[in-house]
Image (cartoon, rainbow, N blue to C red; front, side, top):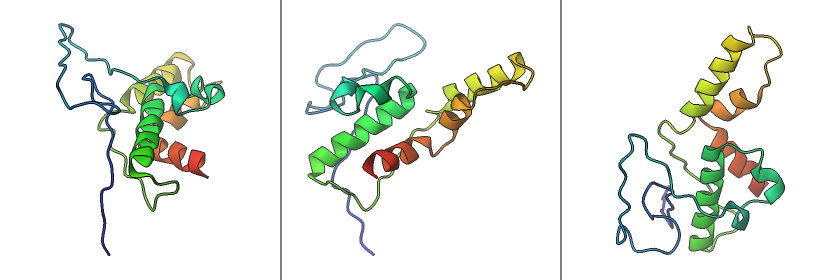
Length: 128
């Protein structure tokens, strides 16, 4: 079996997304926590869906859409996502709410968005 990488996309604290020359315009940060430079998600995702998505899911869907556009592919054989600790914020939110609400009346959204394959699952749902 042969595998070919046809495109890649990255949303990061630097200007790395879209048609840009890599690291030609460096952004300096003085904070201890870096924030990503996020694209206009409405260009990639239906605005009705955007408000229900966590930041990591929006970034993953936008990056996957950009990859498909760059590769000129409508239906890929596979999409590989890498988030490192990307869903950790959703996991912390879920666990915190679990403690605060004594494990009762806990909305499942934070749990659903905290799993490691959430980004890939959302991309698969959008591609049908």
